Image 1 (cartoon, helix red, strand yellow):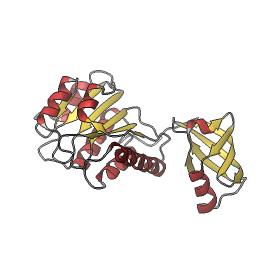
Image 2 (cartoon, one colour):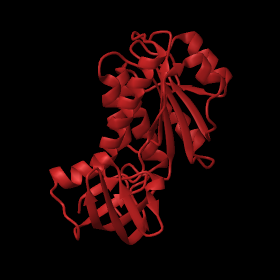
Image 3 (tube, rainbow, N blue to C red):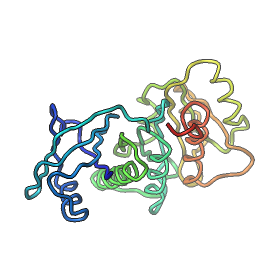
Image 4 (cartoon, helix red, strand yellow):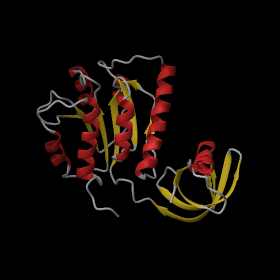
Length: 251
């Protein structure tokens, strides 16, 4: 059954309204008609079976037949704070970590970030990355679309980093490996993780010091230096494998 994403406020009682983009997709691409049934997710982890009732112009509406909690969301809430790389690598990172179950992506402008833009253009980039996250969530069957925030400087992020059971930063200069750190963390409950990753060239030593001073633990990923577009997804996968649902049996 075809799956559509709607905003939480688009669901009211037993009725669902589809926005212009989703209406265009269901009517012009899929050629659906009133009476057809579709699967809808509301971005908060609830799934609905919806019967289409009307398709008029830029808006479609349907009636909820069934509702249930999603089984595709990980029990581990991972936020990835990613140093912005050059080119379209950020899109690849957002797409991949969405598939791996992250709930939030915080793009960071760091000392070694090559791309420098005006605030307005950064917001445009963030909107593009948010669309990528939505497309990836639909493709992999998630009921929650990760939030992609507007980029901010690392120093600003460090001083107001969101709370998490475990705060980590990946750094190639750290001898202690992530696996060892996760072994120690497993002695207590871990339901949320904040993971910081640098851009090309990694985080500068003084940036790592800043993060550590704010409660982060520095961790390495082994003897080989990974590209930034590899390091973040690998770190997320290791976290989800240890505390989340990567590798778990299908429900």
